[in-house]
Length: 43
Image (cartoon, rainbow, N blue to C red; front, side, top):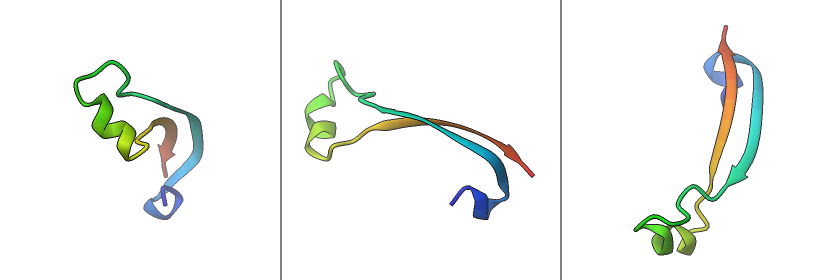
């Protein structure tokens, strides 16, 4: 999807539990919500 938006050299990081310890932790866990970092250059 990022490549189709004009980004190049896309690099993906690890999926992490970004809601651990927050007040929304149980809601996020119900949907198996994860955060992921990425880096890319706009062509």
